[in-house]
Amino acid sequence: MKSALFALALSIPLALTLTPPAAEAGVTVRVFFGQPFYATRLGPDYVYRPGLGWHRRGAAIRDKLSCGEARNLARQRGYNIVSTRECNGATYTFRAKYKGQSRLIYVNARTGGVWRG
Image (tube, rainbow, N blue to C red; front, side, top):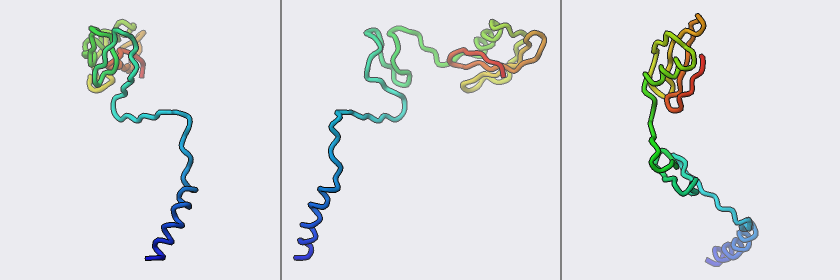
């Protein structure tokens, strides 16, 4: 019993000397998992929508473009004879002609961005 108390008495000052000093910088760290959430509003007319983030009140939010809308965006960029290869997922794939050459093009289903493959 005496040896256990002696060991405890020796370990307390040793533990106090090995403890790192407390941070004095005043920094707050928050960890979030999943959809980003920003506590700061972007403006007085913004509202937070779970899964979508901060958006203006009354703004129409669409999930994805339809396949026909994506095909029309490709046609507006100068591609013709646009045929659908795949309209699933985040990127739609089309086969099209541009200045007589066959091209593979992609359309981002959310933003409508068009690029050549």
